[in-house]
Length: 245
Ligand code: ADP
Ligand code: ADP
Image 1 (cartoon, rainbow, N blue to C red):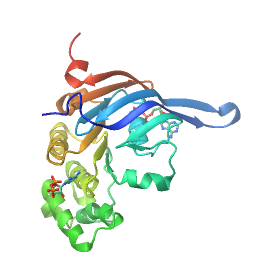
Image 2 (tube, helix red, strand yellow):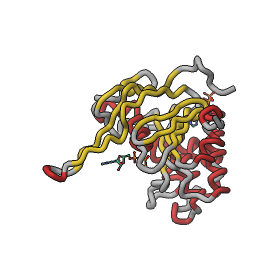
Image 3 (tube, rainbow, N blue to C red):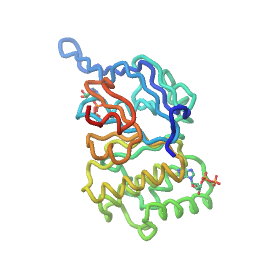
Image 4 (cartoon, helix red, strand yellow):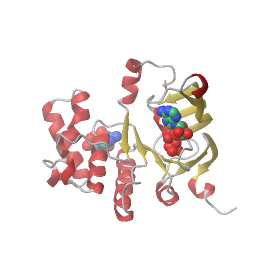
């Protein structure tokens, strides 16, 4: 069963706003990328954020791990305030959050296994535990045979599977996926979505997925926020938001 109405909130936005200021003097511009957003993401759900390019999706999702500090409003992750925190205070919150990207962002000078091991080194896991965990993750994403390869030797879909394994390595509670299938063909997109579904079901991880592709949201998200010009213009169960009026 999917998380219901009474499920616990894991990410809370309350009147959150992010304004970017660029340029100086006459060239000064202000862009409100995220404009007074209030929403709740429930523990264990797959939450989609959809909207056209420039709608504010990336900024919204980067505010969850404090990569973009809020200009005003409140953000809470698993009971801890994110807004107004220092980098040092954000560190333990970030350990609970994994992230995957459109362009995969793998370390090109590290092997597949080395990429997946990296967050475990940072999190202070012992060598034996790292080895076992990397093997387990490569099996989960179906890349055990590729452990010793470098990213450039992999297809796009394989690279994203490494990205997923790396993001899941240190057992985060939340996985942020920023246009994680946009560089992939339809078949490979389905493979990646299946992995995200399995991570959600098997590990109970909350997935927040940004996309501009309606089909992706429809096929995977329990609930969805539709963004336009920094605002959430619709929010709710995916089937309801996208059902004909
Ligand atoms: P989306 O992910 O929906 O494409 P973004 O969150 O990337 O939207 O961008 C929302 C708006 O904020 C856009 O107008 C974009 O140009 C602006 N923006 C995003 N990041 C920055 C930045 N670092 N500096 C200035 N403007 C930015
Ligand atoms: P247990 O706590 O009994 O090991 P779990 O259901 O917590 O059972 O975990 C089962 C397996 O899934 C373990 O091998 C664990 O490493 C892995 N796992 C648990 N949570 C996550 C997560 N958030 N991301 C990736 N893997 C996870």
